[in-house]
Length: 257
Image (cartoon, rainbow, N blue to C red):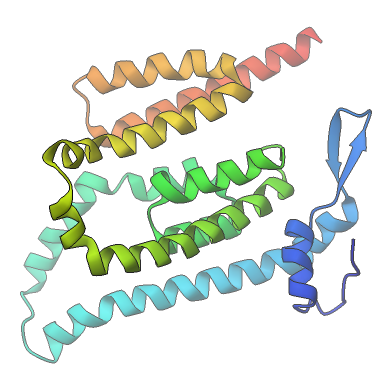
């Protein structure tokens, strides 16, 4: 499948993106797939440090670029509104969406993996584009969730979605106003169902691989959507409930076998 170079250089298209993620799968009893110890060591020694280095560097650069316009307006042109207003704005945003800063990385990481998490949080549109793309790529090659093969398949899917996203966004931004004016009102009104449709498709895809978990997760999600609780609490409650059910069911199944 290729030869690893001691310096971990970018040879052969980085070995088809690290041997399709640098993952070699071995068949065991024709049913279970175990990741090669040699490749896992290569992943830990060469791939993972580079992924963190590139990921952290690009995110820090993105943060700096995002701060440049307000810093320029505030301290060069003299339009600084005052620290009290800055703090008030921060607290307002943090109170409404601060929980997502913790919940989303934890919730998405099992599917996105290390590199996918860096790429997705830099590119944005995680729930409606990056996560479905990663899940679809993993499902296409039959990668088991949580494995390094699944992580690298997800990277390929996310990369493809970002490239397609940039191309389509460029076209849509240029011709977007004219395009929207052509659509009849009924079509424009239907756009609000796009995101729920994406979530429903993702739920159906994962439910097909573990329907017993879906039976417990779906009723809780539906119940929380009607209860008078803050919106930011619904996702973590559903996520951790599903994780609890999954672990409990797995342990009981393991004991029974």
